[in-house]
Image 1 (cartoon, rainbow, N blue to C red):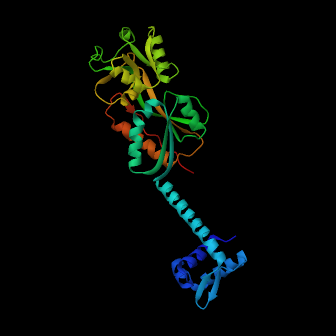
Image 2: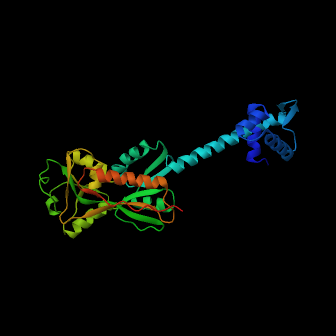
Length: 312
């Protein structure tokens, strides 16, 4: 098998036509080019060039090998380019899994800002349940996951991202919007829009009402917070949501009034436990933290950025 050095010399002689030109392009001496060519011919067992005075004439075998040789170096150039992109954080693939509250609100803006300076990075964003998010990260099917509340799945590392409040999303002109907070009893006469009981915010609503000893009668049950906000806008009722959910429904026509006693919701991000954090993951989390720090929603507060996990 020919070495890369021998292939490179062969390629240069084929492209440039003379040993002199090949030597100049490779920054080596002419005798070195001749010696490497002879070594290559001995290795393959047939002549690659016919010597005619000071000229080299490629054999039929050389013409067959040449396209394959150029393909090899084109592939090597691609590998080197991809390596440089990965080293600089300008290329590669970042796989993100998230619950809908994050996917509909914070993450689209984060993806746009992230790719603005890294256009060669490919991002996949999958929306799924919290358990699916955690399982996907544990199985290395996603590099980062975003959920609320906590979850117990082996093989993941969970860190706080932000904190917000749980309460009632209502039109700005609603009779309860003048209050600083609401109770479950305040909402007894309201048409309630809730997330499904199998979702974190749906389960949280049930706990809040159970603690207040008030029956929870959900008139409308949905699977996504953006749908709940759209229903509130349409006049279908009021929704039991958190501040992150309201971020996904931009505009000043809706307000969130927190429950009293206060109920906090923690947004978290997940990474594989036994894998060094990639450069792309580190930089994306920083973009998310910067967005949270700059957001104008007073009900969503960023957690301190985590220390970077060192790569081996």
